[in-house]
Amino acid sequence: MSKTKRVFTNFLRFLAFGATIAAVVVMVTSHESTMVLNLTFTAKYSNDPVFKYFVIAEAIASGYSLIVLLFSRFQNSLWRLVLILDFVVAMLLSSSVSAAVAIAHVGKKGNDHAGWLPICGQVPKFCDHVTGALVAAFAAAIIYLVLISSSLYSVLNLLP
Amino acid sequence: MSKTKRVFTNFLRFLAFGATIAAVVVMVTSHESTMVLNLTFTAKYSNDPVFKYFVIAEAIASGYSLIVLLFSRFQNSLWRLVLILDFVVAMLLSSSVSAAVAIAHVGKKGNDHAGWLPICGQVPKFCDHVTGALVAAFAAAIIYLVLISSSLYSVLNLLP
Image (cartoon, rainbow over all chains, first blue to last red; front, top):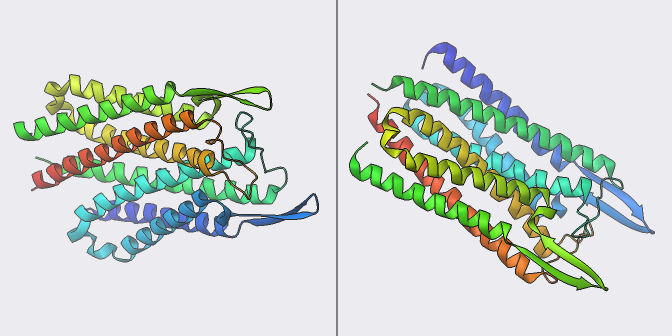
């Protein structure tokens, strides 16, 4: 791997690390309480299994990005493994973002047919946090897509 | 690509084609009507944007698998493009399955905190169809994971 290419790859990994850690922090700190008919109603990420999955998946991607960054000087010997793990992490990111967007969409718009009411009117700050986390996670997924395309391009160019 | 390897790859693509087309058909044919408080309530996939996205994504994956199968004898010259498109299709499958599972989970279990009631008690046949489509789509995603791992393995072995 050339030096420029390595700097570019490490920069992308650093961005991906930042985006995933931001997604985790913004999602975990999202909670809001509101009074509905004299009952206190608290919205937080851990009330929904999909948001829990989102936090776990983003944390894994974040940890993985950091580890690969820290060991980037040994990357040459392990780059085959890194390429395959990058691919697995990209699938995980695309899966967690999609699932969380699906639930967030119900939270924002509801679903008349199923009788699910939107909740963002009651807990707007919670919804803002979730939206922020989703945007960061989506950015991380795109960064991984660029990373893998760039790795595949290099690999395919190396071929005889 | 050796002959055995090509037969194996084509077999996997055929399975992926079968699984994605099954997911589309089972999801599209899922509709059930029920009476709730003298009101007729019809559950169908097109009532939910996530299920629509699911059908479109699975149909794209299905069409792509068929095209690559049909042109498999010309695959040698285009295999670089096929490898990258396989990767994009795998991301699409993982994204559509995850989003649909998230909504199906709310349909089955509801979410007490958000006040979303489960609907599977009212429309059990609809839920069975959705579950079937999700299983088929999940299988297709796994098949694409195997396909890509096998391609990457071959590519990495070709390297000097």
